[in-house]
Length: 250
Length: 252
Image (tube, rainbow over all chains, first blue to last red; front, top):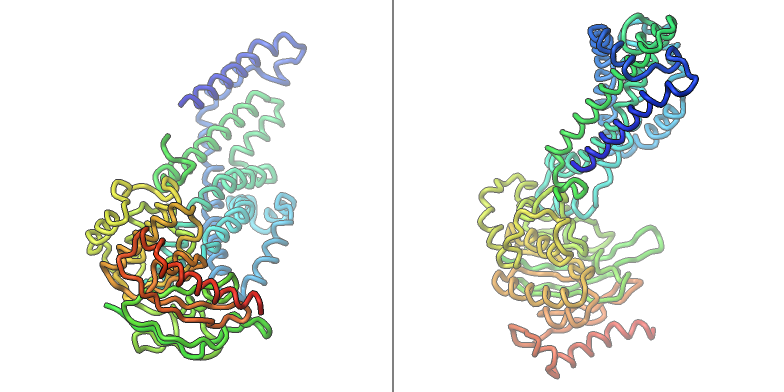
């Protein structure tokens, strides 16, 4: 709680400095609008913000869900089918070295200006961190615990559910914290490239019309959404991973 | 509930050159506490895993309770050098793990688990997570886990190896107490001569590279053995003989 109030205090000081410090400089309001201006624009365009944010949230969550499902499935494949390791790993490493943003225009050509291209971009960005962490979480189990399980009559399914999956959960939760903002980047970049919906589109609209307060208002929406997403992952951790030493109640 | 272990001409080679275990033969009597002592790299841990059916031998044959070993054996449990506890499970849940993983109803083992917790001096820590326990308490938990299903054969691979000397000594005496009550067959790998003489009915001394049996020593010290036992001349004699067995291969 103490940390949360410290953070709030720091943010408040920053906003106050912005509000009362910037007018003392020569920076005009249409270049760097004041917090009050941004807030007015945000509340004034609230319905618009909600509408566009919902579109972006949809493609982000869809891409993240796909990335999570495919990432975990690929990790399982590599963990259980040893011979696939030498095929899947270099392929994914090569895939990861491609800047996905650079192939976004191609995705628009292939999949159109609709949600598909955004979801795919979000998926591609989210996939790698989920895969890598799942691979560690599912695969790097002490061999002693597997031996012990076998002696006690453990079959593959029970060992998966009670040992591998449980061991992987904190790794996957950590990966989600990285993959969620990446999926959001994918959606927004997709919106930059084409289409007429989403918070990225709203940012671009603000830019075209030199409506900088609208750009900032959209950025505020994005920030609120990210905070919400990360908190949701945090709540999941608090409920299911309360055994972790790092989150024990002090 | 107990089991004789027959080891006949068992060898284990890793690759072409490394012979971890070389034509080892011996019989481990039911209800006995047998230690395997030897320097690092003498293949004692490998032999233990071969007995459990977790590693296959490259030669020879093992039977446990009259049944040939050709895969992980049932009715046996293992304690390792580290506690190998599941971090997301409490002490009680960790002990019940072996029941669950084998598809048994953990509820039926709850009473037994609590009994073991009390016996091991872990009462009050049933609901603690491993990271909240000391190393000694973690290892006690893993011993309770090995005893939960009351297996006829318990394989221990340097179970006190990672503990400090004082905790080690105390756990040794506690293990003796627990074992006397249940009389499972125990095969105990250690490199502590004192521990081997204090706990065992029989000591198998192994040499390294290749791992062979150097000596088999029957320990005729009366039970229960106490701190006093450590000072008797018979204890010292037996310890000297074990040391000699290990020592000969240093000379050669």
